[in-house]
Length: 521
Image (cartoon, rainbow, N blue to C red):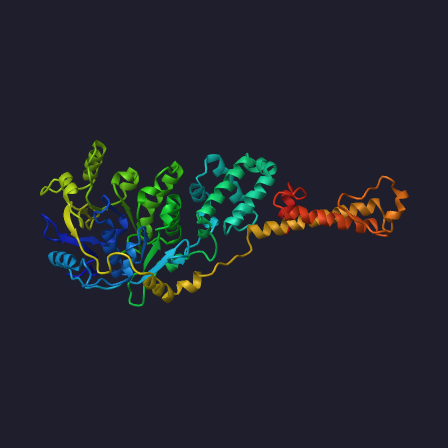
């Protein structure tokens, strides 16, 4: 029995479980109806993800997955007959009737922090104010101010490429709050300050590394190797999980980008890409209604782009019903029912399956062992398949982590290192606002100098004070005997402007100049 049968359009998931002697397969054509992998800790969810990722890769489908424990990096290395687990895996493979032909899979490692994989970057403009507000934990009022900042930046051609661009834009919004409030609604400096503090917290967590250029191109994720195997993109998430909101928002952004950028393909014979979202409950924890609605929309519509999305979580109850209803393919590992609440969740989980008269679903979900699951996959007409007790096929790649040397060797051989290894700091909002502020200050200096010339004609000297006995030298100014008033005022004002513009808060000269800052766009 082969793991993939492209003529039949199937991939082998497992089989030969108790009460079920035939293979359990997933139809590639139905895979973009999405899937659920659920079960308590230690019941085999990660191995199931690894097995499915291998099968998709063999079918030529690129895979994107988050590695929250470091175990899925083993996809890059072949399994071994000398491994301590080999005997048990070989026995299971023989029972299922699947060959245990150990092999490695083409793998690319990615990491937001650029430590255990190639850097993954996006820009604030691509992420958008809704997801960035979620990432920062903003309330409705603060989110409104952030939307105004994005709107003005877009209208005035100010690119938001990294966090310092957002900070510079917010600083300008705060300085011009009165003018902006007349155009877009109330803007308070308190809200601007709160957003700036949240940005500082995000920087402290290392989240600023997510933003910058070169931004990740989706074409570098959705690709195959020279032999036609789908690339397995492993996103290192061990450190990322220390900031759950950053983890969830990043993967949601990635899924949204797939939805927005990929063309419509209808119902392809096999998915364009398979996306595994581990710890999926983090998507919905404390998420505002607008964000939950966006997730539901993406889950419902992304299948027309050919993307197969798999949510991995401990309990199906972690997901909203409208999202759960989109998941037609299901792998349910064991659930534990120690409390009354757990027992209710267990019964609800069993109700999501098409009943099998050969066994009791509630009992089966509590009794399946490690590596065994209750499965249900869509049939050819999209009808839910009858629930089956299934032994999940053992993976062909290594179970567990890899060494740092092995990871480094794979990263060194990848062309992605040359493309994303160095950051590019282009001309964006931060630089443009600074130049416009400097230009406004210079213009103000020239205007004051011209005004001084009108009041004190050229040739008037400090020694000739009789022309204007009220004249005083500005504080901090210096004048040599014989200096013209034009030179004196020019020197003094220039020093004052330079000191003013050089400080973050000393922008009294340019504050409120809504039109002047955007002059020469």
